[in-house]
Length: 213
Ligand code: PMT
Image (cartoon, rainbow, N blue to C red; front, side, top):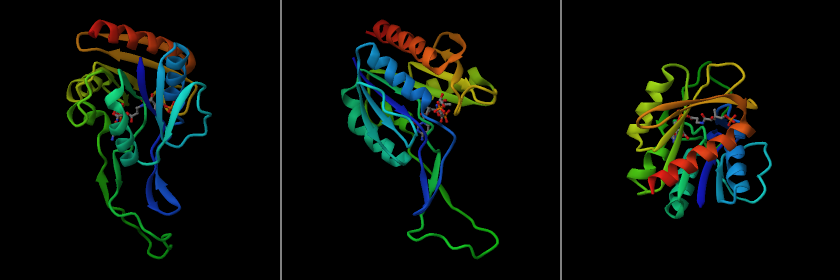
């Protein structure tokens, strides 16, 4: 199976040395890429900047910004059977990044932000992806309802929802607990290491893919 996995944060430039980003370490996405590759699949990992080593046997495409990730995914998703979007993509980027390092002068500084492309939302609508589409949802409230809304709006087969307000799971930790939100039902995968969870997720995604065909 050809599998695309997105991972890590994006960096949205403010000036040549500063950026807007988030606390995604990339661990969840890299563990998923590694688990798919270990199961014999051909994996392309499209990743924002992380401190992680590229998993063995995985093709790696580094990107920096949400726009860069959108372009990379758009270029490759057409030949994929399965796409899993674990990246924490910035929802907004700077309208006009400064070309020179900003000087500290005024007491306040206003940044104008504009929406980034919704990469997961583009998969079906813009890129015409017909394979198995799996998104993540990072929520701090109404986990299942918000995930179900994303499932429908973005045309996904499955949303992997994590409650990122819980200590010890989610962003930049070695563990996670997720709710698998399918069109007709939901299933909890209890807290475990991201390494172990990735193997459980690969099985769930493959079952879904085979059931779809
Ligand atoms: O990287 P780690 O430190 O291991 O942390 C893992 C994680 C918490 C980042 C991961 O488990 C996770 O939840 N990833 C999704 C984070 C996120 O940004 O969720 P969201 O609810 O804002 O986005 C919903 C979905 O749309 C996600 O699949 C996201 O990749 C995608 N998206 C979002 C915005 C955008 N412009 N384009 C997108 O494709």
